[in-house]
Length: 128
Image 1 (cartoon, one colour):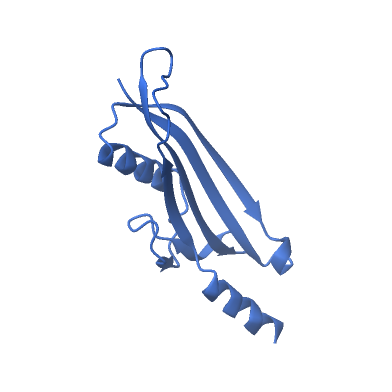
Image 2 (image 1 turned 60 degrees about the vertical axis):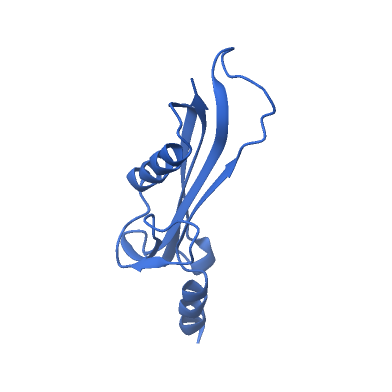
């Protein structure tokens, strides 16, 4: 019964890829010369059996949509970089500043059978 509940929980909280931006800078500058366009926050997560085999992962091709990919490892730094680049291009950014990426693994919620991998990337995009 516990395994069925675990699988249902994973299906409900399936992998997710999100991109959020904030652009309320009100005339500030970066390095005294660059105009900030937006801060970008990207999160992509998925679930892995024993931390190795991907079960459900976020779909970086369609961020902010409740879609996922099954049995495909899309929770990668490369996927986050592509989402960051697409966001910067959509806002006509010329450069990025202070881009950081964090990777976390958690598995204690499932007695270390199913692990959740989360990659979070953030940065500032600027117009020179």
